[in-house]
Image 1 (cartoon, rainbow, N blue to C red):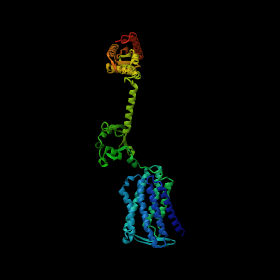
Image 2 (cartoon, helix red, strand yellow):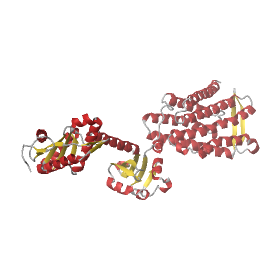
Image 3 (cartoon, rainbow, N blue to C red):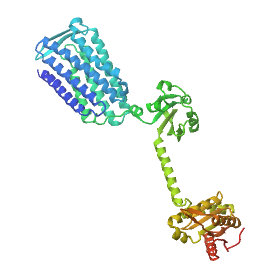
Image 4 (spheres, helix red, strand yellow):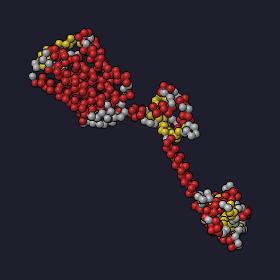
Length: 528
């Protein structure tokens, strides 16, 4: 009597536990496979409840009525079970639409066969019931051929699920191993008890052991969920990561033939998998040949490549790594391509902006000539070069004579036009390699690398004459101007360009003392 009460209590307690686990899982549907797991546990609860109703039936007819819906819970549970395991173990890509339709159509077809069994007896030939104390017991069962088809299919799904879960346990981190082991231990009891019930391995046993097995499964699954956080900490399979990664990945064997490729690589190559797998990489994408040869077979290499025509370039970060297998033996190579076009374009734009800012920082905004800041920068560079090559550098400082009168007579706009006018003359008369600077308000400086004092004086005189003979047309006025120029030279072996600048400035001061509109050479030496 006591064991019969305990038997019923266990069945319905397990059903309640299964319903609780299912509700908890369905509230975690954002997690991988949580909805499928919840559906599976609801089906387990249905099977347990209908099994309990069979045992509590008062007549064989009542028991026979409850047997039919009990199989529906079992077949639905198996459909949810295999889809959950595939999803949870990282094989979700196997769950194509046709396979899902197949898995979930099996319970419907099976239930249809069971409901019409009285016409064909292909599933159950006969089932005998009799009272056993307070419960209804099974005396005998004769199965039809479709029952055995159903049984083989069911056990096959369970074994596949156990295999995939065990495989995941071997490859996963410790917390995932514990989750997987609890799931395996939960699957085994209903598997064993169902075998005992199906094949009547315990003579005289009138009450099926499967409900006890499913009760143990519900308990272990509850432990996995609440203790090991099964649906809160879900493993993300490496296959899923590789399939969804934005970087192109190509795996080569030791003969540089393509053995695997992800969707991003297919999109990069604009080829289907069947057009790529098994082919040498040089036939798939010819530029690889040179890159692979340069990288070597057993070393890591990284480079940037540019593909496409000008204006439509695509930039990629290319990484080629050796693929090591057992005992660090070289098994091939992995190619990873990351699209860095946006980053490179940003770098190019930034570089152009920096160059633009730099150009603006070294040019006078009014005349377009180099400014005094750039003179300080360039004279150091040219002085160092001149010292190495033992060549002179000549400097001419130019000042506009009576420039204040131009501003006072014609206005500051006319003064600006005058500065622009003279800047054009100096730029036109100097040579390639010479530098023309706006040195101050109305002062200009010409730096002439590899130029003797005599040659520099000739250039300065030519500039003076050209300015004297030129006319600036401004509105209705014609403006004539003259300039004074001081010239000096920095000879090889002399230290400090400041001396030459001061000498040219002193020569300019003497040119003004002599009456302006002339060229004066520095008194520090008449150097040729």
